[in-house]
Length: 397
Picture 1: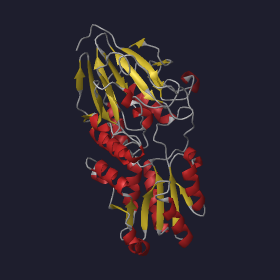
Picture 2: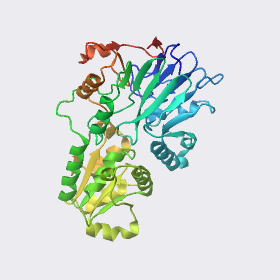
Picture 3: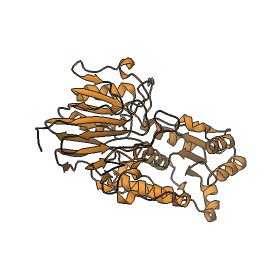
């Protein structure tokens, strides 16, 4: 790998908005992209990413690396020209493909099967740069960080992550052993939000344990992609009771379980079968659901029939409560709702901890709606330079 040329970084989108993040890293001989997402509804730039050599014109991009399968990181991947390779974690790719196959009936195209698979810790060398995927911890299973090395420089791209998940200790160990980092590109979703008395995934699991013992019939409303949360819920279902969901969620959990540590696998999840309804009612259950016509009638029926024995656990971002399907479900369950949720993103205090561990030469915070990061009074080492870079602005590492 050559040390003669320099590394250029261009935040293509995400410098001042959360959704639709994309970052370019290039040398004189090559260019690669990290993430290629869709904007969140109603925020920032809503236009589709139009990048010469990536989505239009003659192909001039060596690879695109994806940190995880959430739409604000992968949503515009189909717009990338076909001869540009796209990489992501092997298990995350399988989960993304399962999601797409589940939505084929509503017009979803299954493009995840074309993505090339990565394994954490196994680097890829592309011309001037070596890219090493590192295991991370986010509400999307098997998410990755990327260490980019070349031209005498080392860059860490975090993607979305947190230090209050089940893999926090592992992630801290990785960060402590990175060595010198010239540029840290980190998410800052929660940068403007206070996180005092912030809870963690272990707290969620303890709450599930309590709720499942206080109620005979428990419905968990959670994102189907939040594997850690769903697995923890299933582990808390008492012996003799049933851990239930639908066929799609069961399939996703079995994909995720293949390479997970034993202590974090899901436990005895089975698809709901109407012909076994009598057994479920007699024994009790914990059931993972989604809002909509498939599960809402069942929730309504149990609340009407067993109002004192039924509970709905809301385990999603509070902003989703206004969505019509979710609002309807909550209305049926208003007699007994428990809210058990923590963010999939790093808190401001933990972000300061990460920066103090890594002590990068330069720091770029994206995936945030904060317009001026410097105004957040972020505690950073005196040796670290905080960059305020706008979308499309190029700078040399």
